[in-house]
Image 1 (spheres, helix red, strand yellow):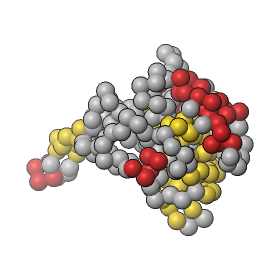
Image 2 (cartoon, one colour):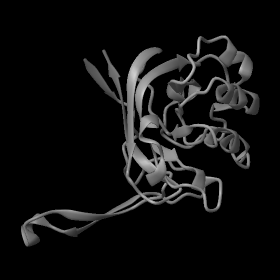
Image 3 (tube, one colour):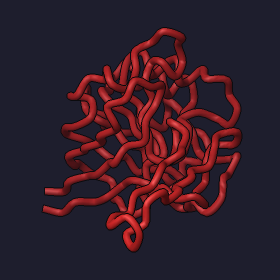
Image 4 (cartoon, helix red, strand yellow):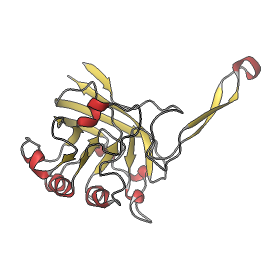
Length: 204
């Protein structure tokens, strides 16, 4: 069994979506003085590898704490969409064998370019692609950048997806090959619109 960590490391100098706060980690106890090291953490709810909830797009919507547990763990397929360009469309997805009802992760050009700085031209899903994934009853969708939709798009693709499935953003799929895995992505059980998560793939 091989376990692959597909989470972004949270650190003060990491990339964040423009307008979101950068993480701060501030030590308030030191071992040499208090016998232990302890720190405060300040970070946005959509920092790094994170999950969205309905509260992200809908006032009064359900929070991360209410996400169905079965959407956070289970059989998963990783699709290699590198070479497809900036937009992942319904045509690209229809070329793939996408099983109904599974967890789906999209590895795109973003994984080849890395995460040294924020790129406004990151690869993303199109509206027709999102509708197709809803039609395929995808249980959970994960993407390899900080948003599933184009930069400053207004939330249209989130609206399509989040009503039907759980959405993870900010996955690090650089070391992952296409194929079948077991996925586990566990956010904090927190009453919020999103939450950072530790996500892994298990290769049998």
